[in-house]
Length: 118
Ligand code: 5GP
Image 1 (cartoon, protein in one colour):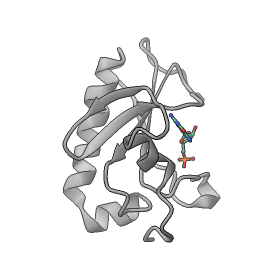
Image 2: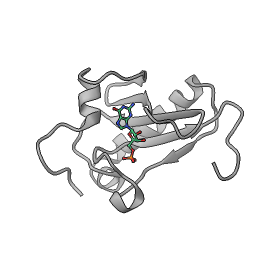
Image 3: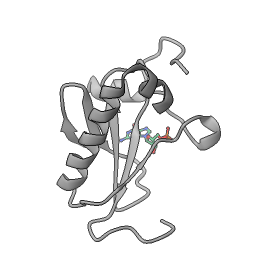
Image 4: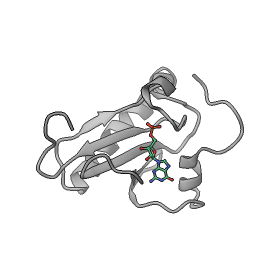
């Protein structure tokens, strides 16, 4: 799916500094922030600076190198947050709970590791 409409996404507004956020990492093409409603001791969002891709399926088809950059940024950001092991989750589609249609990955972790079922 392509992103529809002209309104900037909440993540684009964060990148522009229009909405405050806790920035963890920024590279040429990706930025990482702390999720405003954490579901784990470490809950980060890895977001491409471009809003051209609504979800990971569109990103993988359109720019696989950018998808690889997201995975690398997830690893570095998780380490910075004190976690070497992490879950990387892409909610894909409204029926799966996706609410922001500017592709992003959730990094879920805990410094001592996540328990089963978290
Ligand atoms: P989705 O459900 O689309 O995969 O995830 C969107 C995520 O963005 C949610 O976990 C939500 O808490 C987070 N989020 C939404 N608005 C903001 C915001 O303004 N700041 C931050 N840091 N996170 C946000």
